[in-house]
Length: 140
Image (cartoon, rainbow, N blue to C red):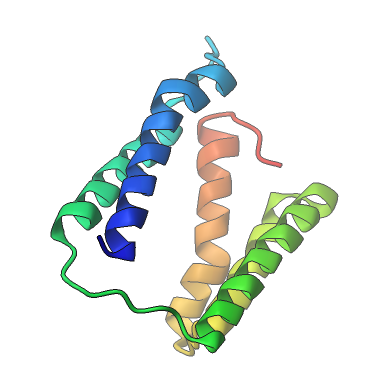
């Protein structure tokens, strides 16, 4: 068994746990909402299940451990996610999301201005509009 198959199985397990326990236990139904608040978490959980299944059954590579540079970049992204949660708690969703997207775009070496504008400004604002204005669900 390769590491990809193992991770695919873990991903499927996480998706199933979200569908069976996480979402029902932690997402409440709201009568005034246009859509059920469970829709987006369920879509994400099903994507976990499908992607993990595809990775489990269709992997073709052999085991390749990440390089030191790749491992450090993963640790930096984990630290950035923690920093973003702090920024979102102190200053709100938009400040945290925009700053996180700016740093992530820098880390993946994106330099095209149109893509930078879309990822850094338009995507966080569109998510905010969808949840806060359209679905009337608060973001941190």
